[in-house]
Image (cartoon, rainbow, N blue to C red):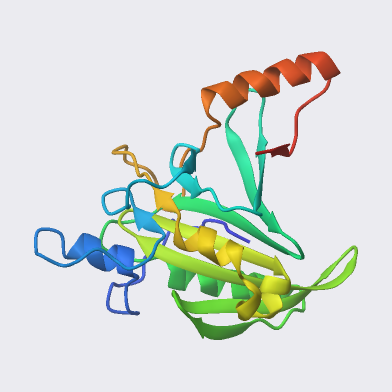
Length: 226
């Protein structure tokens, strides 16, 4: 559901929709604007004294009761991040974007188009980060609610996918919403194609632990819980 259009990416203009707080802070760099009240934050505005799991381009705050499930290859490169809290789950992704333009509007439209092609009728709703996309999709286990949230930042975009109770009722986000609002994005200085996934890597000690477990089990490590 997240693919590049033929002919290269098309950017929306900064005036097409109100920018996120993170993007507004980037555009206002150099003035005396206060930092945003909540994240996801760019690393330049992130508050200190918060314990976070450092995955490279994405730092996830530690919240009691939330299980972080990370799927990584044997080299420690992270391929999927899913947070679980009771009956709710939150899948996270972070992607390259232009410095002064948001891409969530376009990405959201493509997700909706893909869903419609599968016979799903998504709806746009207003949320704390702007326009979200909700839908009920068919899964092998039966119908399930999903909710996509996008946050545009300076040269990055966070895409969050709620599943379960938090997807059908925003009031049940609870601790998963707390994690999303506490994310920190660390964008490197490397020029990257728009929408390219930013590199995510397990901490060295976790990579070594996973490799040891793989050698002991004689199989591939998947869904490493954190």
